[in-house]
Image (cartoon, rainbow, N blue to C red):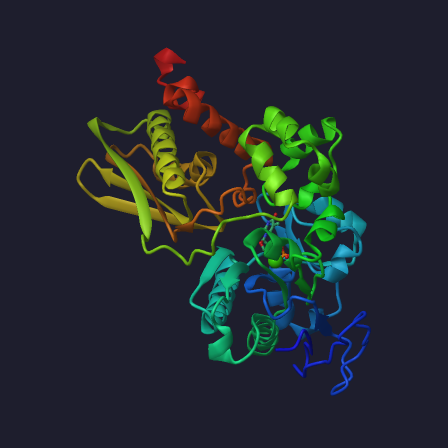
Length: 428
Ligand code: TTP
Ligand code: CA
């Protein structure tokens, strides 16, 4: 199997036995999109991520938008969900307040998100992933890890060529572009897919892992959010190169378990395997009241406790889920269920609460209820340290603080920290 090939016509390119691969264009089709890596035929863990996903779907459906700056967002929160790559030239990015985005690019086309449509496109893409390997671990609506180990014989080509063909097929059949990262573990595949966006194809192998990581800021490590970045900065660490050379003892002293994790990732070490979606479809928790309740505040207190309970189970089972369902039973035994699907999967009580609270407030109109429950479905494996929860209306500090609370509880038990909203009025 060749160590170089064309990403447009898939012709193999010859690699000199010694010296550098310097070929600039494909000899068969003249494309400049050549992939080369000295370990290209050995790497089998891929991460695929759609480029400017929501915007790409809208551009696909309205060709007049093709070269225009397009921003998806607005709505209640008034922030940018995503901006196409044209709009990014003006400095527009996800989570930016919409008024700032419009100021930076007044002629941008602004569209409201159509999550139902994007989810359908996401499912279509996932099916194409599953055509190349059953080992597909979805990460979010538009990205997944694929383990192609052992597929080389079946496809009669390297995992690299399989992935490049898959990227082309997604473009042709679905009409959006993706970026592919290929490496020997999940962390590196994820880092790689981000290196060459959009329509990218990046490869990281054992031979180049240290310098490739060294060049990046610590913020590129999935899970290193703003709070951890600040702490690292305070210790003079802003780049992965600095993590590579910092004494492990110091990192563990300062950051505990996370110190180990950071040190390993900085060396490109990640032992997590690609885990296809789990079969358990949902988790739920409910409580029947001693006496029927119609008071909003009391219902909300019960709801918060259920969210905490459910989040705990999701975390211990290493599950994240995308659909939050509120269940209510009225005093006369009528069951009401209300659901909401999130853009990103979650396992955090804060996020479960924000969404289920809205669902509950719409129902708490004075009706007396005898039972309240909450469910989380669309489950798949937790992404461990990844930032899966940061997008759904709860700010990053809150979710990081929840993670910090979890750590304290692991050590000292559940009662070590109680959030005010779970307490009854008399104990507050
Ligand atoms: P991302 O994969 O983070 O971003 P993207 O696909 O738009 O762009 P990139 O090319 O950099 O991958 O998110 C996927 C979709 O999730 C995105 O199109 C919109 C949505 N999203 C939000 O709604 N809010 C957010 O803050 C982010 C980051 C994404
Ligand atoms: Ca994306």
